[in-house]
Image (cartoon, rainbow, N blue to C red; front, side, top):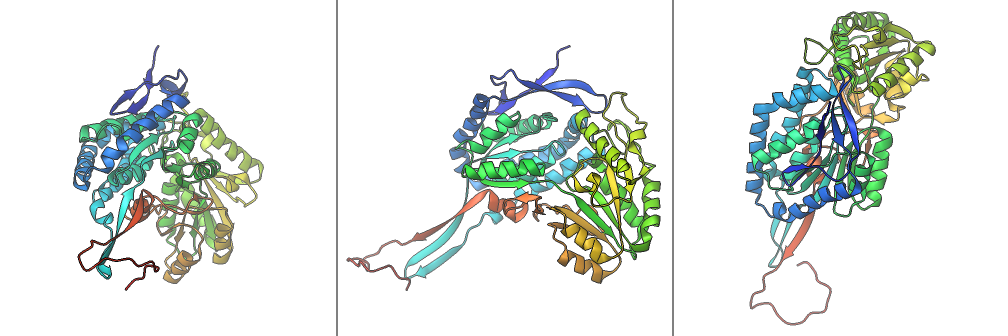
Amino acid sequence: MSVTTISHWINNKVFPGSSSNTAPVTNPATGETTKQVSLASVEDARAVIDSAAAAFPGWRDTSLTKRVEVLFRFRELLNERKAELAEIITSEHGKVVSDALGEVTRGQEVVEFACGIPHLLQGGYTENASTKIDAHSAHQPLGPVAIISPFNFPAMVPMWFFPLAIAAGNTVVLKPSEKDPSASLWIAELWKEAGLPDGVFNVLQGDKVAVDELLTHRSIKAVSFVGSTPIAQYVYSTGTAAGKRVQALGGAKNHAIVLPDADLDLAADAMVNAGFGSAGERCMAISACVAVGPIADTLVEKIAERTRTIKTGDGTKNSDMGPLVTKVHRDKVKSYVDAGEADGATIVVDGRDVNPDGGADGFWLGPTLIDNVTTGMSVYRDEIFGPVLSVVRVNSYDEALDLINDNPYGNGTAIFTNDGGAARRFQNEVEVGMVGINVPIPVPMAYFSFGGWKNSLFGDTHAHGKEGIHFFTRTKAITTRWLDPSHGGLNLGFPQNA
């Protein structure tokens, strides 16, 4: 039986490209190959990039008012039809529909933020900065920019970037994950319906061939990337070596400290929600619960009690958690559970024994709770990116803080406590970019900026918010003098402000 091929998008229409290479796209709940995605050749990649480059001068010179009008129409269409996009995400990623809908809604917040970009793009102006000389600054677009997006948020992560890039006057090439590529074309169709001109938003499907061309092609001026730390390092080093502006958001190992005075029921709810939502395939998922002092036994019991109630199954049914994205990834996550058990950790709730409500060949692994984890175990050291929550026991706040600050990642963290002094001290002392106080997943609103520290971010600019505006523009300072009859004559001295 033939399957649909997901292709590229150029000039507001599907572009099949010249490459015959494809990759399978599966339904994680059944294991069935439902589609295939084109893998671009170098020539295909250059055709997509050329489309963005050709469209840039016209879009740059389009008035800010007209650009925002298109953005508002896109926002309204997205709001009306986001349920369609959520179902597409579930069919290829596996997360439950309610979670997919939440992903789209969080991405839409950035669209709404970008609708206010006229105020954010205002420059400064000083009249008579020097005698009869005026000075002003302007924020101008960069040119064609690339977005390289991960599989876990095929809608939200691209929407962290492209609304601001487009509103600021840039053109965009989106390279989605080949694991769940259909959302990108749905979004492209929506931009077309909203009235975006040809070539402003383009989609390049593919693998490393496509990525490398985006990182080195002279027409691409900036690259936004989200993915694992090793690939983020590669993207950053390769892109910057080619003279591009790069923001590369990498991996994470997010800890949540639970202090003895915390509300343990609230903390247990939070650990389950943050550890197992989207099957743990979130860069902001809590994967290490740090239990401080004598509350560990009670906390583990409460977390286990809640974990056992989670329904794992097809994301379109009445389930709390869906499958993992691919069989390869499921097997890799399972291997960490095996390794933790072999290293002497206690498997409190074993997701390897899950009985899912879904296809027998689906990529299933149930929520897994592991206690007595130590820092030398791979289940603690590595970013697992699956439904595995490890409990690390420590004796004091200082020991817990050192644990987090010694970790090479610095993406997100949280503390659960009723002690305001402890919370204030934690937010000041912890070496992590995003901090939650009794909030397990501290993803900032769109008007703040998203990004971690240490090996969780390469580059000095975070996503969306004011830093996002800064990333997709460059500032030009302009000094103006209009001569009048009082000026004239020669003066070879160095110009001075007066």
